[in-house]
Image 1 (cartoon, rainbow, N blue to C red):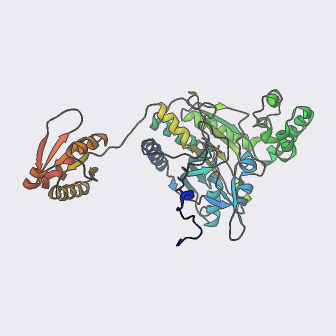
Image 2 (cartoon, rainbow, N blue to C red):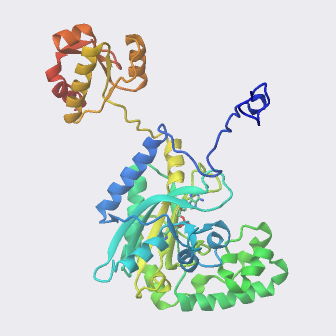
Image 3 (cartoon, helix red, strand yellow):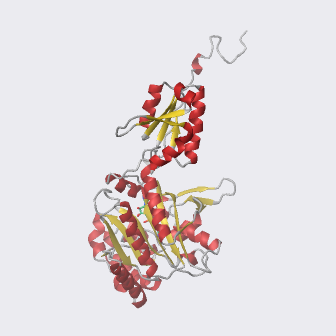
Length: 441
Ligand code: HAM
């Protein structure tokens, strides 16, 4: 009798196992593999160290925030909010949520929520993934990483200059030359309103030239039209009224003092009247550091930032002052890789062992060495002595520690230099930790 009436008597021929398809990372979202990770660590460690030298402390905010935070904070008519956000509905309550496209809005929200800055200003930094649905290309990804620093509650311009000087120090510490500083002042709200009026009038005079994007932004956000990459618009944009010509005394004095401080610090800069940045929250100081080596192709801006004094109020907080920037870490890694920077941390030693007694001695000796601060990899997964020696070599370790039957019996460990020659020698297992610790010095 057929116990499975739904199957033909000959068996489940048609139900041959289906080979699962291979899943891949989402387009524009990259894996950072162990061989690449050392450059990331080099960058992150150096940045953390330099930022700490200026009194910046770490803050960590969620990757998911309510969509309204970014719409209000970054601005409804920016590319980021209009086109690039990963927005989804919370399944339970229908709330609109967004994967953060940047860190500043979240940090300001957190500062307001926890009354972080009302009794004293704060210098904070954060780092981590950001998400923008852009067309991926070299240096531009959909999940990318920023190292972000914010000086909250400082009116500047001393702190604006300090941040720029701090970045110059970071480039130097990383050995990166050829990153150029561009600065501009985009004034305050009143000055921008006057400029905006003049700008709209200019664009209206050339209405026949405006593309669909520009027309849509004409009244909602005419400043953004200046960011247009459409070649047909460029001559008209070049002739547009310049914001710098509308800047009044206070903002002008702020900008002049910033320049004085940069000159005092010995930093060269270019004043770039068209630098307005892609996010709406800025006022007065804006700056970008642009790689001039050509390594990054079209995505040369490695860091950007500026002052955003209105953001606290826009997000429901008390009026405050703030200035900050973010560095694109992937772009930093491309520059460091092009420099040939490398720092592959390898263990000092790799333990090769054969037999039960040798295994016990190997594990014990390795733990004692780690107690002494030595990085040591113990062979796992058996293998002949020859195969284990190959793994020792591939690990990058400076020494192989060999523990066979003889060593297990006599309680010794043979130390074989793997690089740069040198004779193998034996030490009592009890002395291994101190001998290895001495070799790391
Ligand atoms: P942002 O100019 O949008 O500013 O981004 C800062 C940096 O992040 C850029 O200069 C670039 O290096 C990197 N970046 C941006 N988008 C991408 C992408 N799709 N792929 C790879 N890298 C990218 C901000 O995000 C502001 N929150 C900076 C700030 C902080 N302003 C004040 N405080």
